Length: 117
Length: 270
Ligand SMILES: [Zn+2]
Image 1 (cartoon, rainbow over the protein chains, first blue to last red):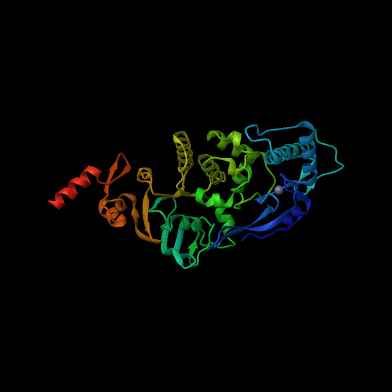
Image 2: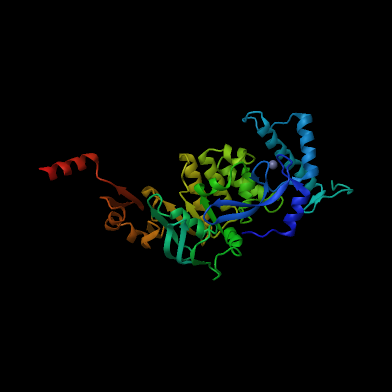
C-alpha cells in the first residue's frame, strides 16, 4: 500500500476536486477483493481518484463557465456531468496560464507576485 | 530477470494460481496461453505489482522481493495492459490523469501536470487517433478506446517489461494495426521483455521466444515457443482433437470440420 506523504496532506488541505470543488481525502481504492488495493487521493462526492486543483483556480473556473457558457464537450449531453467536465477543463487552462506566468508551483498559488510576461 | 518462486494466489478457498515457478530472462518474449478462468490475468497482475501473493515470492531483476515497499518503483519500470484489470480501477477518471498515472506507478496522479509529459501523452494518443479524447472520462469511451488508453499508460514511462493481457481485445482493424506498430516500435528500441496473455492462436507468432501453457492455476508446460506449440502438447492440454501448424511464422490451430466429424462418427457407427 502506498504511503501518505506530507505533500499529499498539504495538497488535501489546499486543493479541491477540479470537477465538483469537493474535499479531497486519501482513500484505500480496492480493485481486487483478494489483495489488490492502493491508497489514492480521492473525491468522495464524484467517487473518483482525483488529484485536484487549487481552490482559487476552481473558483475562477466556475465563474468563467457561468459567464461564458463554455462547452468543450459538444458531443455530450448538456447536463450536470458535462458542466463538471468543462469546469475541470477550465481548471487545467487556468493552471497552465498561472504556471506559465510563474504564479503557481507545487505549494499552490503564489500571491502578490508580478507575473513573468 | 524476474523469478517467481512457488507463488500461490487464493480467491477465498479457490487457488487461482497454484505453486507457480517461472524465470523470465531479459529480452525474452513470452506467450501465456490458456483457456478462460485458468488464472492468467491474476498471475500477470501479480507479476506487474498490482496484486499480492498468498505464498511464495517474486524476485525483481535487482534481487529485491516484490512487496508493498518495492511495488511502486517496479510498476514504473514495467507496464501492465489489462482491460479487465483497469476496468475495475477506473470509472469517471479522465484519460489524461489515467495515462499520466503510469509515470508514478500509481492509479492516480501524484504531481501537477508537466507540459513535457502532456506533450508525450498527446503524441501517443494522436498516433492512436485518440487526441480528441484526452479530457474525456474513462466510462464514456468504447472498449477499443479504453484499450488504447491503457496501452498509452503502459508505454508512457518507456518500461523495460510489458505485461500484456489480451492487448488487442476490442480494437477494430485500424486500432489493431496502430497498436501493433506502437508495440513493435517499443520492442525495437532495445532490450525489451514481453509477457503476453492470449487465447487466440492467430496472435501467436515466432516474434515470441517462449510460451507457458496454463491450466487450473498451474503451468502445464513451458519452453521455447516452437517446442511448446506442437500437436501432441496442445491436444493433451486442451483435451480435444486440435491441429497445430506453423505457417509463415504464425501459429495455426484448427479443429476437425463438422463434415469431418460427421464422417468419423458415421465411420465409427458402421
Ligand atoms: Zn468531485
